[in-house]
Length: 454
Ligand SMILES: Nc1nc2c(ncn2[C@@H]2O[C@H](COP(=O)(O)OP(=O)(O)OP(=O)(O)O)[C@@H](O)[C@H]2O)c(=O)[nH]1
Ligand SMILES: [Mg+2]
Image (cartoon, rainbow, N blue to C red; front, side, top):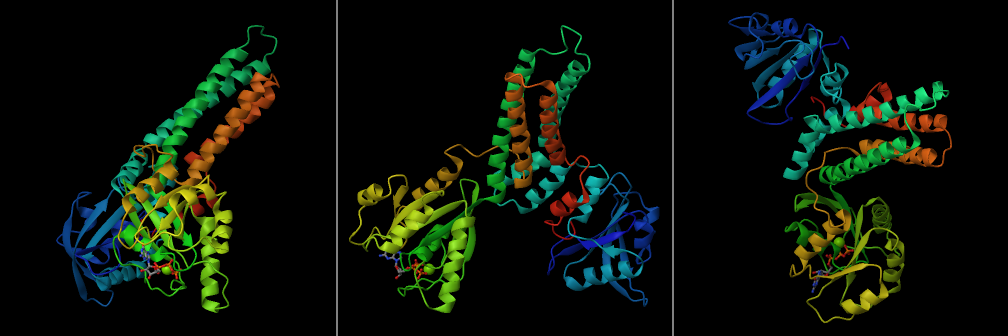
């Protein structure tokens, strides 16, 4: 932890300014080795921008910059830090970092600044993970949800949830240690009431997290179907731009084409895939295998059928494949004489939601977007909520499962010691969520997803 780390905090490329960050004990005096201003940075007040120049080790001045120092305990990482605002473009910032590294700094790992902020106790793990949510937000709603988590609102709820569980466990412990007290600390009924309340509060929190996750990650949607049914045309119609190549030749799309659009504040990650059919063409075969993989990985499958063609065996096979997964059936080419009617399709696939569109004329596309969002959200308005990761949702779900288990144990009178063990499982899941006693492994997993410089 003693290392002084440096990284470019802004994006690589041409820009107005490029900000180089430096953090760790001694970073101010290190920066002063290459910074020449009217005064040394060490002599300037904290958080005060100072004009100066950067000098290379061979004595050349190579950029005019603004620099600022942050005192220990009052910076992003909670460590002594410096930011140097170079001119944009690659070379000034690169040279600045090279010089800093030659003086003893090292390049930061992805997310290392935020990791230090967490390790130094300035933010908790949900807040650290929310930083990434803010950076990657693709809609206003997603940004607000991650901001709420970043401001600590989610962790506050979790901590009070954890406190309630700890209190109940403590009462049960006392009763276990002093069984001779006939009143007992807490009655079976009281325990049950507390558990029921905790479970419903936890479920509400989980629902908020699920909305937040949809806003953060978006809905991963795969467009699938036989060749030539109009999958790429549908992608283009959804995006309102000519993103994928469309031709009348079956087997046009080989690579998966990914793009994102937002509908009602929800990001939809759409993937156009190769048409699925038996083929001996080597390239097409790889495409088809990727399509099959996309079917498995997606949150939602949009299965496209050509209304101008009879339902084929290949269609029926695909129908069977997606029937047990979340999907929609899109009857495309509504603008030409229909060989398959909407009613016929509804009868053939009674448990599927069927929509008729014309990708060519952009008919029914907005309704399709509504239905796609509804299919995932269950019609609930996805607003509010906390920007969280799927890791956090897993922990919270596991904590709730243990609480439900505890309630069962208490109700059936299976013993306080068993109930206490179960409560402790629930507590450790919440602790993992909050990053209490986090292992290096867990932190590596969380922070490796960050960009360098954050
Ligand atoms: N009339 C009509 N033609 C359409 C419609 N959608 C697509 N087409 C035509 O159908 C043909 C195939 O369209 P694509 O979008 O390339 O079909 P695809 O499913 O992506 O095909 P592959 O990539 O080969 O699997 C093209 O000639 C399109 O112009 C539609 O709504 N109406
Ligand atoms: Mg295509």
